[in-house]
Image (cartoon, rainbow, N blue to C red; front, side):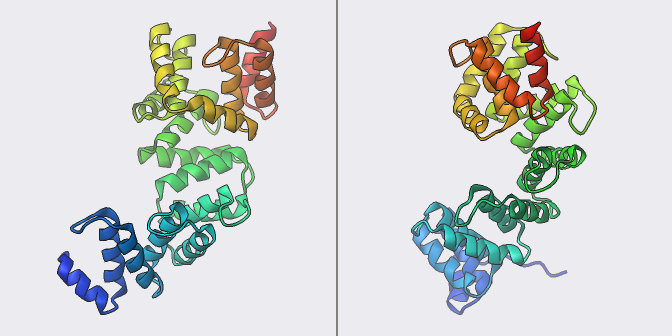
Length: 296
């Protein structure tokens, strides 16, 4: 098979000026990332636009990202959604993942968990690690699809195998709680450590919690405080407050634990019980165990 060589910048510009959509897309990428040329979002957007107008799916996805975040162009969520859709419908897994996130956030459209699930599934079936992580979370929480802990575990484990820190955290919690798998504290600690090593805030906090209670690791207050400090740098309290208000059971559990133990907040057992109850009502066993402990 004949190998293609990488075009020089001069050759790439010449091809792009002739209307070659692939060359235009590649040139846009070079300008976006400063690869062999002076970095310029404006030049990147210009060449991406020319390629996208010819239906080049990578350019459509990359240009959509620029419209989503305002790099080189004015932020325009509807334009981003339109371009992501065109690229996703051509089978581009990055665009499928990005489109799913637009539906999850309600950016340029109404929030639509069913559409988000559909596009995350398509991207996951092509091996997109972050889409796999989101797909596992959808199955676990019943977002856009019926709850299925076995499917949640399957997709989360696939994502974790690709070194996705949030998936490693989620997988660790699945092993800890026995959701979609048998309880395995050693496996839980293994994946939580992998995630914490990548500075995932929730994993850092969970490692602090485990060291506080001596679950699967040595009971060690100094180690716990070290993990809590690192987690605070990742804004874990703010993330948990937001998630708890949005109905996320794990965040409700963490808020309960924080109030019970006085971590980041002033100790308040009444608030702890309130948050634990909200998580327990959603079937989160760790929250129910905490409630039982408080009432014993």
